[in-house]
Image (cartoon, rainbow, N blue to C red; front, top):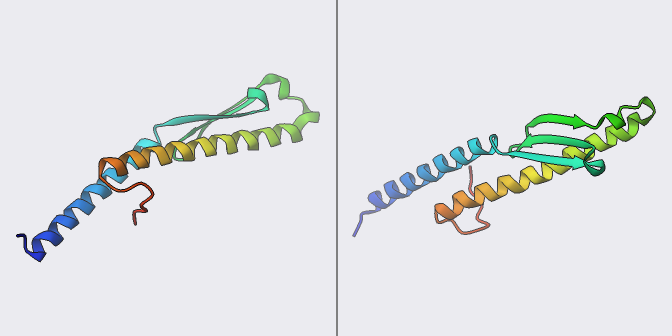
Length: 111
C-alpha cells in the first residue's frame, strides 16, 4: 500500500501532466483556422480557434459608399459566426484532452 506522501506526489504529477496537455491544446487552438461568413458568403472572416482574426474578405459588390452601414453589419455578423465556430472548435479540442486524461465530460479544470 502506498503512503500518503506517495499518493500526494502521484496526484501532483498527474495534475502537472494534465496541465501540460491543456497548455499544448491551447497552443494548437491558435493553429486551427475557422471561417465565418455572412451575406451569403459576401463577407468572410478567417479566425483561429483561439479567436484571433487572421483575415477579412469582402466581395467587391459591397464596396459602395451608400452601403457602408450594411457592410459594417455584415462584417460584425461574419466575425460573430467565426467566433461561434472557434468556440466550438476550442471546446472540441479541450474535450479530446480531457478524455485522453480520463477526466469526466463536463468537469471544469482549474487551469
